[in-house]
Structure formats: structure tokens, C-alpha cells
Length: 315
Image (cartoon, rainbow, N blue to C red; front, side, top):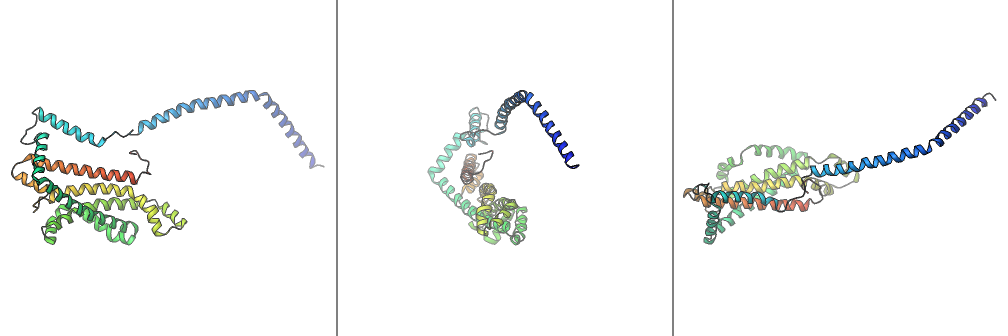
């Protein structure tokens, strides 16, 4: 009996408290509902401007829509300024001929068959060196990036090669390979493979280790791991190296074609230098620039198609 009394008292007190709270809730029911409605409407009114502000902020930070043929605007503006300065007589025609003079010279060289032969020879040299450098860069990067033994054997050697000026290897390669076409292709391959290796190896090394753990949990084989995780993760870095390699092949070519060559754009420019033909030199430079722009645009187009799943600022 003594133990039941406190429990009964506490029960009664709880009941009284509940009745009191019910009464207070009953009296403040309308006020509470009105308060909740006002809070909800106020939050909605506050959220709407915030959403609108967020849209404006995101739109302001984004680069915006891509302009049509945006990469041609700069070159077209450059040629327009060049033509305007030439027409106004602000440029020395002996040092910098007018654009129409350069185009007329290019037409004459093409009609003579000289320009077409030189372009074909340069394309063959650049293509052979680029293919060799691309293969070497990809194979070495995959070996060093996917194997600790390969990394120990390859990465230090490539870093040492990168520190040595590539054009400084020309005398040594001439002694090794002769002064013909072989050493030219070998030098271009070295110029190409270094940026491809560096960027692809960096992309392979930068793959998040959580993806490796996830692949192990899923029981992926080594081949599936490389195909489904490694390759997609490393492709952005590979395309950066590919663009640098394409540009490097043209930069190396213009120097190599002035060493014991009998054809090619570099040879044509070297011969024009001896005779003071500035317009012919500008023809060669313009063709090199066009080749570089077209090849870089082709790599960008392939990259955009292959990496269409990415959402970036440039998308």
C-alpha cells in the first residue's frame, strides 16, 4: 500500500499537468497555427529570392556560352591589324611584307610545285616522330604508373631526360644515327614523348585510392580495373599531354629541317634567309601556325567527344 501511494500521486499529478497543458494548447491553438503559417510563408518568401540570387551567382561565375568559332577570332583580328597597318604604310615592307604579298608568294610557290613537296615532306617527318613518341610515352607512363618496379626503373630516367635540353642532343644523335632522316624523327619523338609521359603518369598517380579499394571489394580483375577505372580517370591528363606533344612535334620540326635537309618547310625558310626573302619565311611560319592550330583543334574535338561525360567550365 505504501508503495502504491506515491505512484498514484504521481499519476494524478501527471494527469493534472496533461489537462493543464491541453487547456493551454487549446487556448493557443489558433495562435500556433497562425504562427506556423506565417513562418512557412516567410520562409518561402525568403527562399525564393535566395534561389533567384543563387541562379544569378552561378550564372555570374560561369564563363557563359561558348562563342561560335571563338578560336578563330584572335587570328582573324591579328591579320586584320596586320593588313590595316600595311595598307596605312606603318610597316616596312622589306621586314614585314603585307598579307596579300605573302599570299601571292604562297600561290606562286604552290603553282611551282615547291610548296606542296615541302609540306608533304614536313608532314611525313612530323607524323613519324609523333607516332613514335606517342607510343613510347603511353607505354612508359602505363608501366611506371601501374607498377612500383616500373616506376623505379622508368620515372627517374625520364625526369633526367626531361632536364636535358632536347635540341642539345642533336650532335650526339647525328654521331649515333647519321645526318639523314632517322635522327630527325628520333629527336621529334623525344620532344613528343616527354609531355605525354609526364601528364599521363601524373594522371595515373593522382587516381583516388578509394577507387582501388572499391575495385578490390567488387572483386574486379586487373584488366577490368584498368579498363573501367584507370583509363577513364587518366584520360583528361593524357589529352593535355597529347596537345603538348602535337605542338612539340611542330616546334622541333622547324629546327631539324634546317640541318642537312633538302626539302621541307624549314629547309625552304633557311634557303629564303640566305636570299633575304622575307615573304617566303612568313609563308613557312604561317603554314606552321595553321598546322599547329588545326592539329590542336582536332585533339580538342576528340577530347570533347571521348570525355563527353565530364561536366566542366569548358563544357
